[in-house]
Structures are given as C-alpha cells and as structure tokens.
Length: 162
Ligand SMILES: [Zn+2]
Image 1 (cartoon, rainbow, N blue to C red):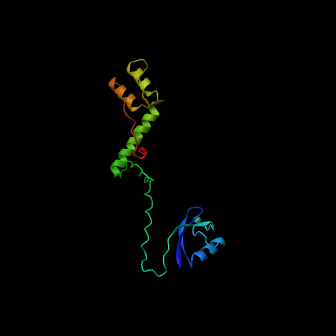
Image 2: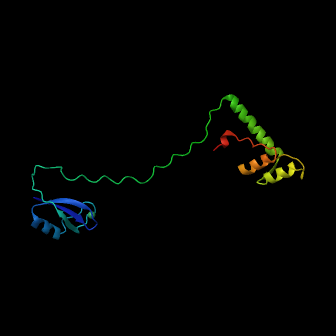
Image 3: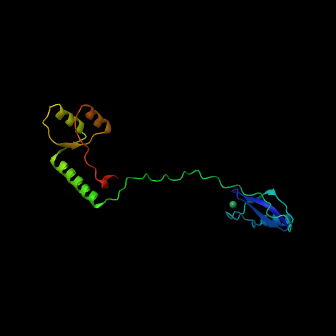
C-alpha cells in the first residue's frame, strides 16, 4: 500500500491509499480518485508521502495549522441606559413632574429652536415676558446663563430617558 498526498484542482488537499503507483495512475485516469471535499476528479499528486502499510508510526503527521484567529471584533455591548426602580413616593413625584411638564407645555408657547433668541428678546425687554419652551443646545444654554437669563430645563420623565 502506498499513500499519496493529493490535491484537487481547487486546491483541496487530501490523502488516499493505493495498492501501488500503477493502481493510482489507473484509478486517476478513470476519474475514480475524487476530492472528498468538492468531488472533483481533477486530482493531482501533491507531495508523495509513501508510507508502508502497517508502519508503527501513526499520528506523527504535522498538526493542522490552527485556524486563523477571528478578526471580527466582538459586537460591542449595547450602552447601558439609566434604569430605576421607583417606590410609591417616587411614582407620585414622577406624576407631579408630569403634571408640571404638562402644565408648562399647555401654558407656554412652544418656540422650538428659537428658544435662545426669544428668551434673549424677553430678557432685554424687546418683547413681553411670557412662558415659553423650546430647545437650546448646551452651548446656547451656557450663553443664555452667562447673560443672566433664567430658564429651566423641562422636567424629563424617567420613561423618556431612553
Ligand atoms: Zn476539491
């Protein structure tokens, strides 16, 4: 018996035992030597690795190289968000916050992103004072505060944290 290291046209390497080299040639010609991976019969001898059948040494083949280390980074864990377990008191407070917020929204004019502009005009007496609410970037909020304009963030309800 003789063992051949073989490789198919697609480069799959495998090994097979044959009676002798003539038997290998014959089987190869008939297309009987096929790749165990893709079943291709277009097989070539790779490096001849003759081993006498019944040889004592077994398992001394070079170990397969370890698979390449995974390069895909593990998916980043989702950023934790604030969570809270509320006691009845806090639930009540939350209710009040909600009331305050709703009251504000109902009784104030929504000026949206014009908030800094409108707040400034009111502060400098260009327009009449009234309750307004809208949006201000942290930068705009800082500028308003630097000018001594008093305003408050709208209360954010815990279920709006996310
Ligand atoms: Zn193959």
